[in-house]
Image (cartoon, rainbow, N blue to C red; front, side, top):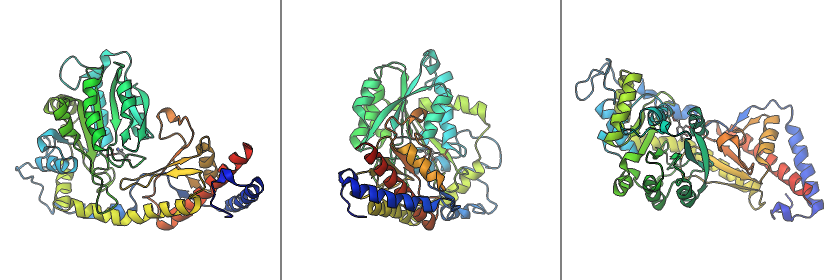
Length: 428
Ligand SMILES: Cc1ncc(COP(=O)(O)O)c(C=O)c1O
């Protein structure tokens, strides 16, 4: 490259020449039968293989610590030692935890369903009393939270993410509307920005139910990446459980986690943490839904992870850290100083969030697709697929091999450079 001056300050002739070069490179990729993918927030083969020891760990002993035979029905809240595992993950006392089935999304579904129809407090406060129901959605955020909310006919109100967590001024202003019933949060290594909410933001979120006009407001705390540090020292997330108890809002915070990205994705154990009042209300719905969770799998997980959760997560980090480093290295090398993109450098979790020049995300994703690279669909990180600036792209580097990520990042950065140069030249 001629220079690493911001691209919009290049001489027009130099930029045109450079664009022609990038275009030639891009055209050379056509018809190459490439099949690359940076869209899947899934653990790679090496990662899931770390937990193959789950198979056989029980060695014929299916009896839980309290004598429960896990092969038989019952125990809607899960076995005690699985609730203990949830306690270790979420930093909440085991008596405040339900150890459920294989997916935290399904227990989020349960909570939204209960909040809507039965109420989370076993009283008259159900969301279905209100004609309109809304949830606050920090953006960019997790598309499945949006899909779940839409499934229940709940409108989503975007709240900007800052480097400290959701913009609390915007959140406080929004909760004066009584139809706003809660807020989605991914508090540690947020999907997709990688942000860990700071202590003030956690405290402010714990106070939000007390400020809300709705008396049935809930903070939905999806701590999916609670132990998913990339380095030796992870980010420290303040306890929302303690903060809510201090703020007197303990009945209005419901937490979620799962082992999906700890052991086998979609074949693990999910957890809910909440006050006794809320857990009692959830029990009513849950006990109609199932006679009990898969306790055999719960016991397997406890035996497999007991006393070695940290080491196990360090093994994950050893596998995926080089992939995140590679993304950072190629972004810096190819785009550094050009002023055409910003990206996050997460200290944990599964994603890198990339912002390109406004108006270009959709185009770049389409350009990449045309030469064999699949990226997360444009707008996916915003409710209704509507990224108002058309600039955010979620990068998921865990699934592919180093070679695939390298090839994919070369293509992505080439598309960003070519599309940006075209846009700049078109605006001159
Ligand atoms: C923030 C967040 N929550 C939940 C999930 C899914 O969790 P589970 O497999 O437990 O349903 C994901 C998966 O990517 C996620 O990123």
